[in-house]
Image (tube, rainbow, N blue to C red; front, side, top):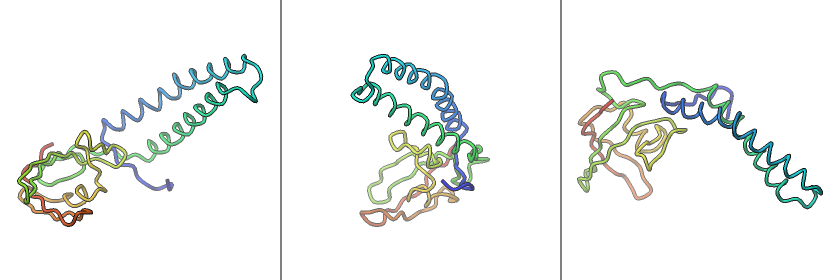
Length: 158
């Protein structure tokens, strides 16, 4: 991650990453340190899989701590959309697929919070990028692997 790269997060997403970082620094670090100490007590470290596993977990935790610290230090909190007249970061958008008539609801979030299973799409995704800045009634074309999809924005909620 470059030094200047901004990480866009909702207030909820920022809090979630802060909580994960705090848990890693306190609880998880202590747990893995205890596992390492216990593995050392078993003796011969050259053939001690418990020790190797604990050291690998420790490396993962320390790496994640560095990653989260960097992302949080470069985070920009997405503010609530004012008036919800246009699709902005943090907006919940209702789209209608003009081919099938199917309606979908998505919340536009930063890439760190994207979770398609919870209908949270990244502002960098094809759909998210296409609808940003658009108002209710706008028809957008989204380039997808299967071709161009056409959606109509039917509602914007905050």
